Amino acid sequence: MSIVIRDLHKAFDGKVVLDGFEVEARDGETLVILGGSGSGKSVTLKHVVGLLTPDKGQVEVDGEVVSDLRREELFVLRRKVGYVFQFAALFDSMSLADNVAMGLRRQSDMDRKEIEERVEECLRLVDLDGFGPRAPSELSGGQRKRAGIARAIATRPQYLLYDEPTTGLDPVTRAMIDQLILRMSSELGVTGIVITHDIDSAFRVADRFAMLHEGRCRFQGTPEEIRETDDPVVRGFIEGRPELLENAS
Ligand SMILES: Nc1ncnc2c1ncn2[C@@H]1O[C@H](COP(=O)(O)OP(=O)(O)OP(=O)(O)O)[C@@H](O)[C@H]1O
Ligand SMILES: [Mg+2]
Image (cartoon, rainbow, N blue to C red):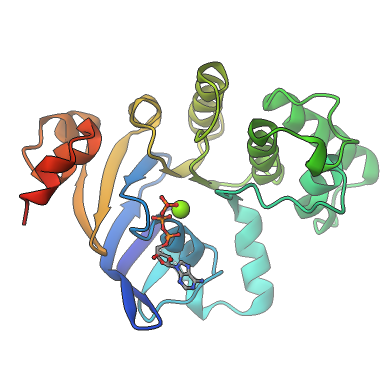
């Protein structure tokens, strides 16, 4: 059980974003992908759930090539792979509870009451109990972010992709989200990919790190290895020292 990204290439209007990116999220681990703004992190995650198709290369989830899946198979995949979008992506025309329930309604084996209970449980997990009837437009940015997480975990996915789950949150909420990511992994055995610029949060949740730079995997290793690396690109990024990157090749 793993997500394997092989030789992934993607360009938009001739501008190369991914240029042979390779990385693997192994069974049960939390992989943190680091990379500068615009380096292609969100683009990478979108390939994992088939929202984008590769120009070359592929993503495999449990050994299945995502870009080969038919429509119905993609729906099955998306129940298995929860996606916390960078900008929450909630539907404003629906209540928060309906947003969270969306993936569950397609599961014929759950009745209304079970769905309601699951929604309430997921909202509680992200500290939004009682917020179900609200419209997304009535939520703060941090609340929307947490609502996006509640929706992603509602189907009890085996995989979770978190795109900047803690960006813009206060320190206490950030720590709460980190705890949640850790619990998903330790209690439910979820395999996770976390994209973040938040280095403290990254070190709290990561089993392994990868760094995306100029379309490729610049670094892959454990938290100890990333702390000790002498690669100026990686050091410059985690220490917030752009001068290291400028002189690197
Ligand atoms: N659908 C699209 N059409 C055209 N260009 C796109 C599309 N999606 C992404 N891009 C471009 O691909 C590049 C990578 O975008 P991406 O969203 O993956 O960046 P990112 O690493 O997630 O950055 P950030 O940290 O700012 O979220 C950017 O230059 C972006 O403009
Ligand atoms: Mg992004």
